[in-house]
Amino acid sequence: MSTPSFGSLPTPIEPAPRLAAAVGLERLWIKRDDLTGLGGGGNKVRKLRYSCAQALEAGATHLVTTGAAQSNHARLTAAAAARLGLGAVLVLGGEEPPAPQGNLVLDRLAGARVVWSGKSTPRELYDLIAAEERRIRDGGGVPHVIPFGGSSPYSARGYLDCAAELRDQLPDLDRVVVAFGSGGTAAGLVAGLGAERVIGVDVGAVPDPHRTLRELLDGMGVRTEPPHIDRGQVGAGYAHLAPGARDALRLAARTEGLFLDPTYTGRALAGLRACVADGRIRPGHRTVFLHTGGLPGLFAHPDLGTLASG
Image (cartoon, rainbow, N blue to C red; front, side, top):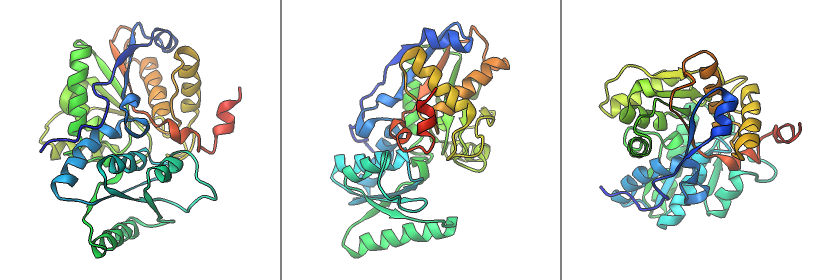
């Protein structure tokens, strides 16, 4: 099964000497998966290449997926659907805001239909997705459902591809630090680089990141020791700005002109700093920070005003 050609790959890897010094490392590189091209970029592009291959193979006319209101995956699903000439239905959590901001603006620009799930239980969310599938079929279409975050054992192959790029770009790398959301990015990296090299920083998107990762790796046929998952950066929860993330956003912007987002990459950089502080990453380790994108969500975050001050 061939994957669609969208996405600007391979993404570059850039040294970040000022940020390295600020966090206590001798060397640090940024893997720029925020520059994957399609729909504003981000890590979901690699996974969507595989999910969309499945959809096209099945003769789909519509992509259906779910996520939070500011889901980067939903935004990129809408963009992928537009690129492939498919319809997109996004079932998003919560209530429709008075005016669209951030990713929601881009969802609409790409022509996606947005369905709001309110305060739904997991079962009610499943029923909503099933209702959208029926609606598409009743209209003569063929729906293809992509799971939350775009993460499945098959789509995680996108980060096997990324692992191969990293091995070519920095063959003797010691550590890769990445945000852990729905788990597919970390699973592909672990499968391609080994558990000892990958540190996932939990953002609070799933109740049990260890179980999520184990299930993805099992589905990929990968047997490995469990990688390290840093759970110290969740703070008050997924939708809230954690103190470490606030500091990390400012640090990256003021040392390297590198803009992160509050939910994923801000927490991931905070996790990297914590790992250096407690010795899990040593100063001499050749360390890569994987920038997974997500910038549009910054502009809809409720704490945007406080981020811009100080």
